[in-house]
Length: 77
Image (cartoon, rainbow, N blue to C red; front, side):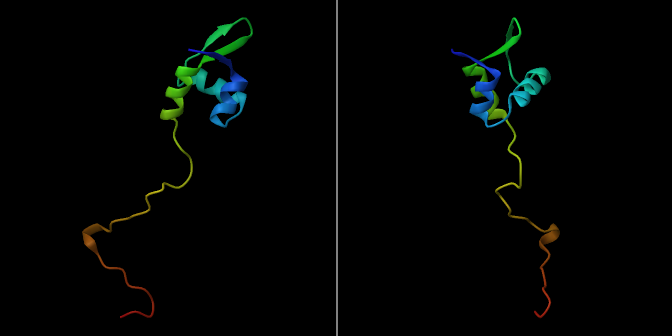
């Protein structure tokens, strides 16, 4: 168990300090407020990192057509 600032937590997740504060506000990341600072436990950060949705196109691009229809391209018969 190690406590870190929102800036350090953001660096570990590859997002901004503001992004970490948004996660805390949404409840997706646990943190404790000490004075003016939010401190995040490294174990809680690891859990949030595993749950974090990856952005962009999914890596599995395999698509199944309804009813196994065949695809015809121009020039093919």
